[in-house]
Image 1 (cartoon, helix red, strand yellow):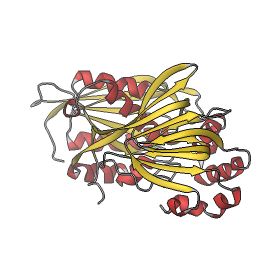
Image 2 (cartoon, rainbow, N blue to C red):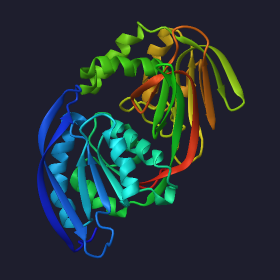
Image 3 (cartoon, helix red, strand yellow):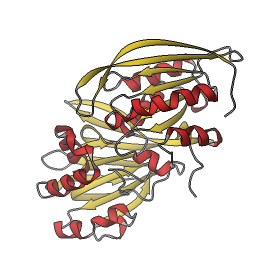
Image 4 (cartoon, rainbow, N blue to C red):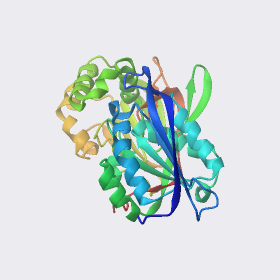
Length: 352
């Protein structure tokens, strides 16, 4: 990036943030507004910061990034999330305000919210702000596949060379509290055990504080889970039975480095689907290493495929749960569809 002439001003504010355990806390923040003299719209970049991401890493990294951004010269405005869902609201508002880029300082949940805000706006892809991410979360699975550095100095040094690329999204239509709802996702959606785990982690948020603790919990809870019955259709193929897990991926990584949809690519226009039936517990434990190597499709009873839509109908009780990008959404029946070229990102060149 080259330095750009700009006027700079600061304002001190108190923001309400959320810690990693969901408890609110107040923090002093510094609002920096830069307006480039040659940009008649002003404020072309919007920085959205989740103060609770990564147990406070976002605020720490912002302290490093701010002077680097001022030196690099893009005009920017900063806004802080103060509640769940606020990043989605602010991203949607940014679409109406004409920002050229949205920079997220947060993790997978923050990306999930930002993408929902962008797509809720209803604008065509060429009018949406470009999404950029400085990873500050616990898992950072979406950033892992895109190889986005989490170090602010590396990020500012490399990001000026990243191309703007089209990225697919998934749409989930599901049920919650007896009402039909829908949500978008940028990474991986999961049902059955995946959704059950996300719900358990919400009840015990300390589980996410360390990857080793998370894996131990996943193993422990595996002994308390029973596969759930459903009727599943992917394009023109159908399955009926009990399922340990069903995944639909836009990108490959989820769950802190697992590759449950290793055949996913955000530019191929398909959902990468992984279906695991009623596997014996010993087989799951014996092949857990494959969750991390991209070879899960070699396990007997697991099938991987590409499809444009996935339909899941409950065939028994309890009803199968639904999650996306690590956020618990609701229950089946649900339908998942792919939206090719849904939004734009600035990231290292896509892998081939």
